[in-house]
Length: 72
Image (cartoon, rainbow, N blue to C red; front, top):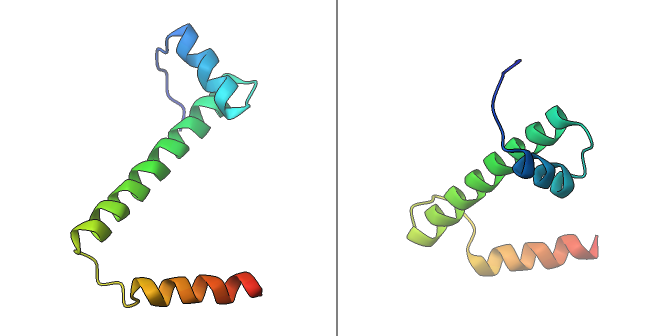
């Protein structure tokens, strides 16, 4: 979707530097994607810490699974 927005020049340069994108649109798009990913991650963390998830594995089971997957 095409969208026209106003962005402060120094903010845009910072976004380009952080994302590694030289062009404006890809830089803003990538920053937006990262922001949304971080929001989803934080929501999951908040749910997990509040005990409001129905994830079937315990922490010990998750750690055991991580060790198993690391061995390949």
